Length: 333
Ligand SMILES: C[S@@+](CC[C@H](N)C(=O)[O-])C[C@H]1O[C@@H](n2cnc3c(N)ncnc32)[C@H](O)[C@@H]1O
Image (cartoon, rainbow, N blue to C red; front, side):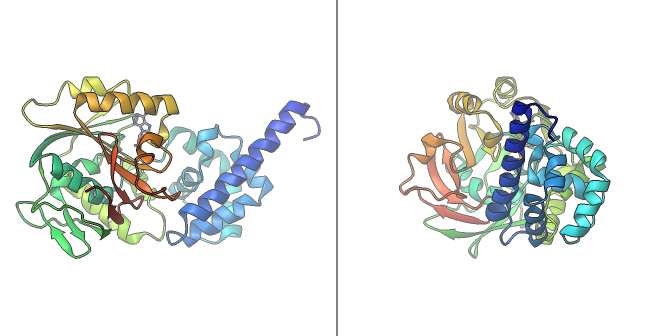
């Protein structure tokens, strides 16, 4: 790279360092207990100047480890150790890069409803629901799934669901007898996915990490439920598109806006604009990693641990949970 002008060479060095660091942080904070394969791939990429050089050719947000690995798997990357994966990745890089440029991580995890359903039930037995950042809308069906909270079971009013969402709980989680009825549901997303579209289904399945067979089975079962009665999903931005969707909601039932695992994708000022606007439209339930909504974090009784996810109602924290709803620690009185 001796022929790069000084500024460009420095920028490239910084890009390489930041991308290596992104893969390192991904390995250390996201893969433990989740995917040994991805941990191995991330460890390999961290120290691989040739592969890092390919990855920094992508726009910055597209260098996300989960996106790069998912696009590679979508195109048939072997689920093998790093040396084999690396060879495949270099050979197929133009196709992987093209895929990464048009895709985004849109992991749809209905298990997050273990954290959201009790908050929803505290609002009323019947609600109208808007999900912002809905992906394929699987979190718009809290009334169609069964739940297990450390052995305490909540089933839909018409009987157990084929999809069981479970969480290990601590604290006084307030559980209803049945999940509240959703009388109207709609989702907003920059790029809504459709469970009736085989390409979207394949992408959703690929976003589940290789070893997570239980998650994939849950995803498939939830998609089967949603396919029977697909939701209204509107393409639009969380901030700019919300008012138009709210205008479609029925009167006479509480309107609840949920925003699980989406605000992290918004710039700080957009997040602030959303947090300001959402409570004006109805009740607002959010589920975000620590640091995404600093005003919510500041109201926590204890200093949050990086990696915690916080569930909030109208900007006040009610619980901590695992990123996929696998744990739930109730903190509200
Ligand atoms: C990680 S997924 C979460 C999906 C779903 N909420 C869940 O918890 O399973 C984030 C979703 O937010 C969407 N998204 C990202 N930025 C957005 C924005 N500015 N406005 C609307 N949707 C956005 C993405 O397209 C993606 O589908």
